[in-house]
Length: 154
Image (cartoon, rainbow, N blue to C red; front, side):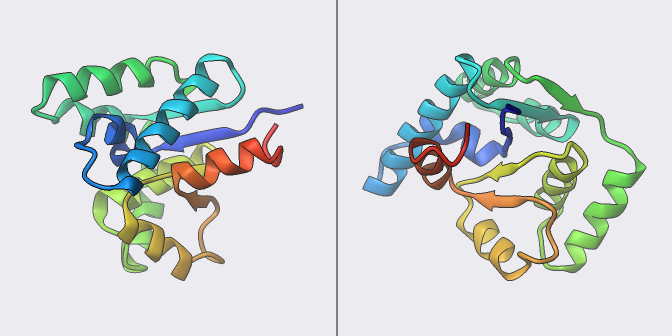
């Protein structure tokens, strides 16, 4: 059976390093840690992209940058930026997505990922408004982990 292909955006990848200012942030951090464990045990595939690598490289916090780099090193594949991704990102921007979000979404779609994981609530809301237009399910780490626990993802 094919493993789920998962694209975690940078805000999700950094969530375990965030200050635990609320129960939701703590729950998201624990969920991302559990997803990383699932990646390590090859229960799901993580997909990286040039966009993720570049955005992470600009992170001034060396602990977060190195921690995220270690997770990205587990990737089964890295999506190289290309003209199709750029064109799709432009279309997604027209639909209201911010530039980096559009580039991440377009990369994940190009990589035929099953899930796009984010802790960006604005992005989650925009994705719900464009659910029929997107070629990928945008989901929180908590919701993805819940689906895994319920056996929806094998």
